[in-house]
Image (cartoon, rainbow, N blue to C red; front, side, top):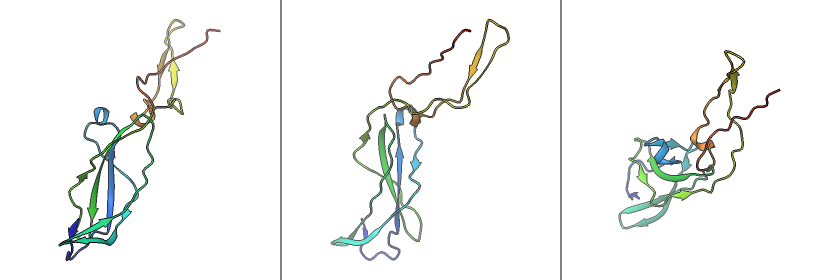
Length: 136
């Protein structure tokens, strides 16, 4: 909603989201494509309804919360929190960790290293790594 006689009407919206506030804290991600505003959708009294729509690709095992910012020629609004959240179902991880390498200082030991997978690629609860090896 904005005043019907505003000098600088809303041009676009930006959608921000958190995948999981328990693991990400207060970090908000911004959807990379702005939503174009559709002006003059509806005028009620001295307020003008401005709308738009966005499609955001969601990852498995997420508890998403959203907020929206409006942008006009003057700048950005304060974020408005969307009332509802979205929970996506889990699934198997679709890749293995990257950057895996191992080294041993003696025949009796081996140290394995890898880059940790980011939260959005866990795809399920109780995410952990399994190291398997074959003795030849």
